[in-house]
Length: 128
Length: 172
Image 1 (cartoon, rainbow over the protein chains, first blue to last red):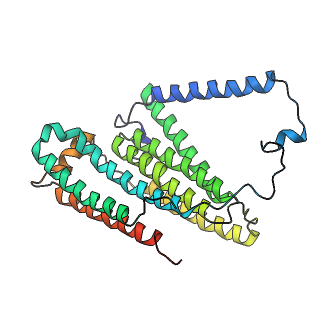
Image 2 (tube, each protein chain N blue to C red):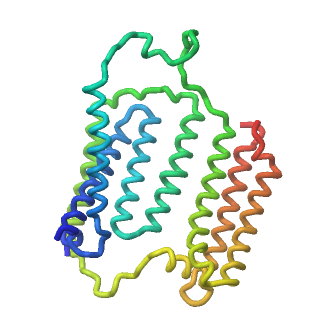
Image 3 (cartoon, chains in turn red, cyan):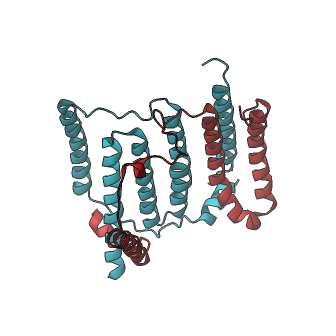
């Protein structure tokens, strides 16, 4: 069986509704953009392309270097994002497995709360 | 028959999006745009996982890669001071070498894929829904994964501590 034949098997999700979704989305968004392109009156002048800022012309580039604090928050977010991935399957079967699942997740959370406590103690959550 | 055609259309659509945005990622000369194109590559890959009925993996792909990793990449770009830097056009010699390297990679993958004789599996497909994953993750008997599950929390703890230690260093 080559790959083209594999695509013809019924082992894949049915895609009809997805295709319909793609077509409807393309037609609606594309239609709206086309409609406004043709219907809206157009005018252009230099002031239109200035950034909005009460009268004073901007100096230099609008890019600026971000605070390092954002990076720490992003990493902490990522760690707890990974945690969610493991908590979600647990939440699905929690009711069925009962106490055992509960004890297991308590151990799991305990270790992670240590990490949160460490970050808290080191003032990583304080904005500088 | 219609569902079969639908699958092919969806596969072509997703693959085309992946290929197109991958090329845009590596050819874009502004790094923030490259990161945004990478986001679309990861989302299209999640679409392929959905097609293969891997709902869990698709959800992980969207929350972790599209949601987490890309945010991290964008923050690390915004932290550098050369955000508005536009990279120079790649010299022709480098471009040709790069195209040759990428082309030989494509040729190798294609020959392998097209000549390999895929054997259809006889056994029933194993369902990989959330219920199955949750049960085997919390199962402490045979074929259970409760120890890895608990060890993961230690790994995540190490990641938190390392991130805090590196970011809170006094002198950089």
